[in-house]
Length: 66
Image (cartoon, rainbow, N blue to C red; front, side):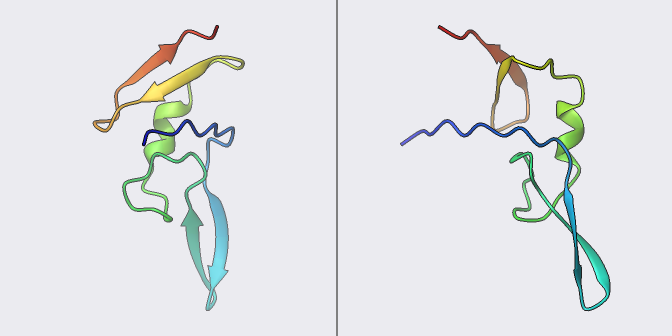
């Protein structure tokens, strides 16, 4: 079943594990969940207040809100 998940964060969150930095994905686009793979860079030009859909291949389209 498809789900709509609204994410507002565009960048990763740093956590320290054994003194080593790891980065958690907060945009939801990483193919290596829960770790960041840099996919959030696709979101940098999103406009506030607009809703976007990202397909499995990473292409984006704006969703028209009712």
